[in-house]
Image 1: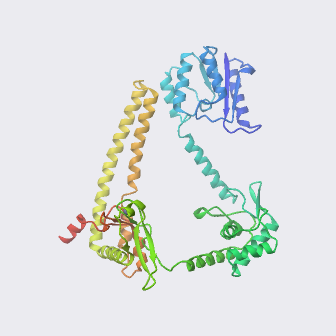
Image 2: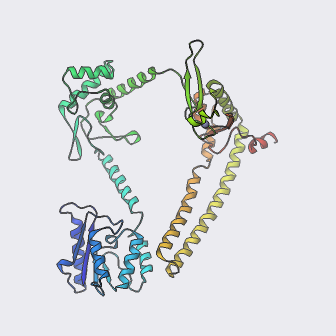
Image 3: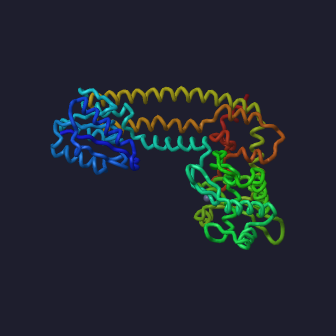
Length: 468
Ligand SMILES: [Zn+2]
């Protein structure tokens, strides 16, 4: 019996992939001087190769298990049509071997004398069947997004005022006029609510209803109307027609920012989200405005259970900020100590690198041993892939740690710090502050030195510094 199996995961009518696969299978059969009967062409459309949960592959398995395909031929354009999963591939190859089925892949020519397990490994190492397939898909999506960016095409759907057609945003003139009006009204000093009222009075609507304040908020902040696409750092110039000028858009953003600031107290918490309670929660910031006397600011643990148990205290903001900033200034003023620290870190780096090289060498050795055990069929495929995964995890584990190591560059930046600096600069340097069980300052860490506690009681660097 001769069978041809074709699969395409993204199926649209008239998609070429399946036809190409069929033609290549027919050609392979012709080379062998055999003909595949029309009813033995299995076409799987719109199915991924992640598992064997597909109707046509199930039919194929039925044929195989019933013995219909014994000593027969299976034609495929490549192995990844059968499966993308290593475990499934192992299963299939063993089944083919057992029933003496000859697989003909147009793309991959596998030597005939290989045992199924070696063949699995061989196909796997060709990169055909890979569990990383999902990652690859994601990369494809990223590459596609990048291309759209370069071509100035939109990534998502069209916002109010445009419609999405043929890969581009087309301006809807009447809605565009409303958007221009919104920007003008805002720049003339009107607030969100007044703009809504004005629009309703003039008979303007959005999505067949009256404007709400949130609509105005969203529209005023959407750079699409100034000709831009994308978000945050990934913003790029679109090819579509802008509704307002970039200058007006930026004026609106500035106006919005200034209005925001005026709204709340002029109280600033420079240590917001930086202080950690011993219970693991961040402390929250509070302002108490008593009838008599000045405003009082304090930090207190945000954990309701911890607060209920009475283990927390209100930390007066001024005092704690003063104390921390003095510590940071003192630390940075000690240049000779910083230089010493730098030397120490360089040595530490060297030692770590050496250790790392040794470690990776040993992992590589273990991998080689695993490979040869597999090639000599001392272990089965699932054990092999399991152990290989474990080794890969170990390899990666270290690269995570690498990010935590203080770099020479980071520290050199600290050395350049000038003496006359605003407090805010020093607050920004602080990465986190830790409290003890008794709510006292216990740890102070800088962004550039996340592993070094400036408040460490037994501090080896300071110890050496005081005894030159
Ligand atoms: Zn707490």
